[in-house]
Image (cartoon, rainbow, N blue to C red; front, top):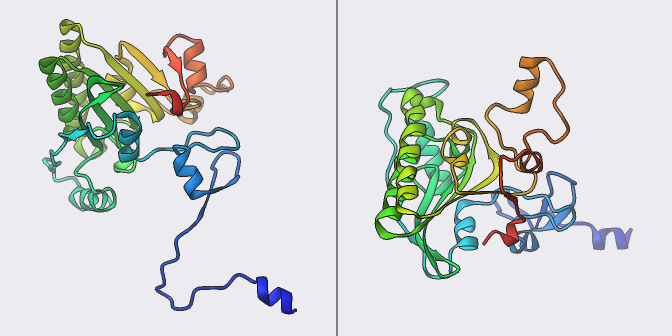
Length: 265
């Protein structure tokens, strides 16, 4: 009994005491991973190699050369439709902004990547599922325009559930707008590299995410328009194994490379 009391885990005293979690669980294989090791491994499970979602700020730090990133994404979303579902859209925006510390679902700016001048745009899935609204579309359009004017490459990391329903047709219009501005890069002879991460779906996959000169996907990322469950219910057929995953898309010619996160830069 003495040994049991000695090794028994001590509980923090006081209801409000904040105790940091030291471990995280892999959502694929269930392995317990030391959080510091998990972060140093770029949120990739060291046991099974599963690529967990990477926060936008850490994605920028991973890709941009140290000390070169200058943020340019500062636009704030509006509520032109006065949209209300279970709560007003403006309240949802305030909650996402407080949670992520940024105005909308995209982080971007100018930088160098391996010494090459670039505009880097990273979608933030933590903000409303990385949904594409007016601000996301405008920031991508401005990023493409800046790259064309300054002779930079454009690198865009997609992570999105699709168009933002609270902005209705205004969000869908961003598909055409971003595609038009990306064409300026082609006319200027500048490269657009599209990096697809889990998930890349909906209107994002139907527009700028699939327009890259080179399209790179992370392993086993979900990439498609509608989700596999919706497709199965619609066509009433079982989908092939691995359908809409990076490796399936590579095999069928929709992406050019499937690359481990450590090799992306």
